Amino acid sequence: MSSKSKNVTFFLPVDLIEKLKECADNDHITSVSAGVREAIEQYVANIEKKAFYDKMREAANDALFMKDLHDSMSAFSASDAESAREEK
Image (cartoon, rainbow, N blue to C red; front, top):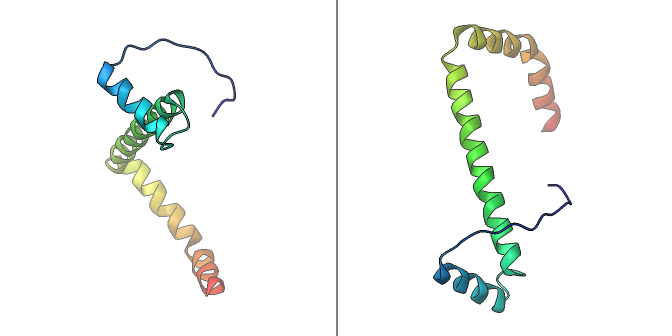
């Protein structure tokens, strides 16, 4: 995450802001801003995770991709097995 910050304005329901203030007052979050930032980071991470999942599902239906994946797995199967034995 970037260390730079920018002040922005959002309109949120008053009851949600009050709940955030209560969370900050009870030390569940360090501040309202921190709570909002944390929630947005989690929201964006979920969107990115879903986008990745969708791309992987699309790739799973691509015969050329699946052949390449299978070929790669086969090429490394001996070294993967050796690494697995060394970890025990």
